[in-house]
Amino acid sequence: MTTQAIEPRMELEQNLHMYRQMAKIRAFEEQVNELYKGAKMPGLAHLYVGEEAVAVGVCEALHRDDFITSTHRGHGHCLAKGASVNRMFAELLGKEPGYCRGKGGSMHIADPETGNLGANAIVGGSAGIATGAALSAKMRGSGQVAVCFFGDGALGQGVLYEAMNMAALWKLPVIYVCENNLYGEYTSNAETIAGEILARARAFGIQAESVDGQDVQAVNATMRRLVERARTGEGPAFLECKTYRYYGHHVGDVNREYRTKEEEREWMTTHDPLLTLAGRLTGQGLVEQSVLERITS
Image 1 (tube, rainbow, N blue to C red):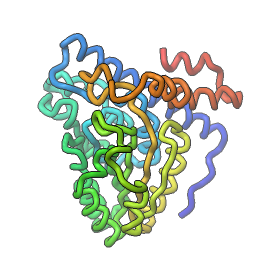
Image 2: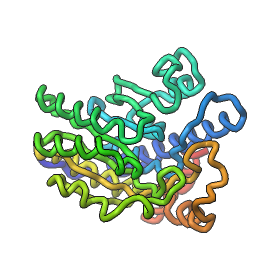
Image 3: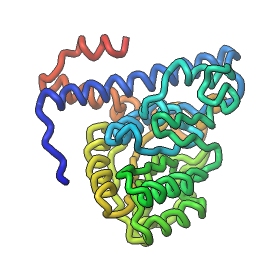
């Protein structure tokens, strides 16, 4: 089975849809931050602002019944896979209509109807779940794939490598998506990760690639290829998405003294996922700036 070429109009509609999805995630997260600052939301949240292109680019390459597993920084994954904004807010606010009846909160949202097997507050904790879902799909012959989202901090967790080893041995349809935002909590990963990240997956014979995680088109194109590969029985893949979180590790981490303001400005102005896609679409004359402004207003 080969991927069909996308007609120009369909391609524009797809790009606008991805722009809307990224804008929705950003607006959602900014509102979450306001709720926290106003002492209206119990507990902590880990904001996804700045990383929207990863969740959207990945999930737009999936079918509704494909599986994802998420992380403590998982609101973007949930929304990109099709979660309801209202039910998401209800969950964060501890309300009965929430996805877990208000008992899971920010870090434990699950939505089986869209294939979201759940966020996980344990770093790297969802690797086994996603791999198990892929094993189930293979045994049932369903044609589904599973995606395991995790941050660069999970590269220090042994369960990830146990899962990848099994996936490689059994050629399971799972894709491990590493959201490399450069920091594990308050520590640069330059101080915690030895060697090349992709080499870790390649040691198991897993197809491993890296992509600009701020470019939703690049993420989506790469992911579509890896999904097609997994769906046709060629086994697991590993995708490193180089990205950046604009806020701190969690909403209470406001000073961010472990990184410079110059670094933050560089990422926010030069590598912003919304600005990147908007600039490309308007620069090519495919859409008016006013159309994009209406989406974000």
